[in-house]
Length: 178
Image 1 (tube, rainbow, N blue to C red):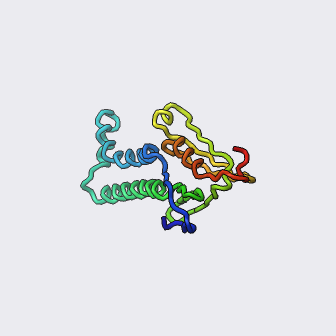
Image 2: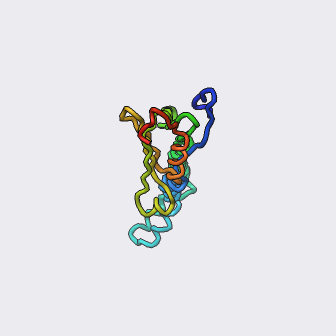
Image 3: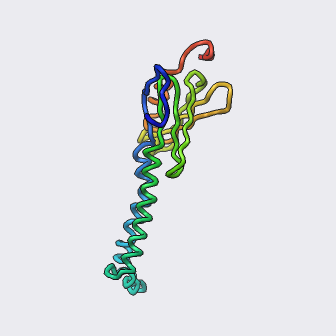
């Protein structure tokens, strides 16, 4: 991981991203937007009052080429932003801490970490039929002594990730509640 430096003796245990189904669901509107200029004239044929609008979709004219190019380029750029956020938003569990890397836009990245020695509680939440079937949920990590919380939303197999986090949480005087 080049986004943050590992401490001496620290190693990455696991990286987690949103479930790929959530990524695909975020891309679906952009796929539909890309198809609209090609599908719309086909639907106009079925509505007699809109048949004359098919003339606006003459793909041989330079102005339609330009408008279509701008439409597709804009849609592709927005879809690429979804991919960028999916790929760059990652939760990293090391043997000493949890690191949350969040990408906000193309040029704004936020990296925060929580030492595993400060972890007070780890909770999972799987709500709904589809998340239960796909085993997608949220993990909330509460730190000791503050109101800081890490939220990992859309994590595949959240119970496994919770168990893995708890496996690396040190048990000692600071964790007398266990």
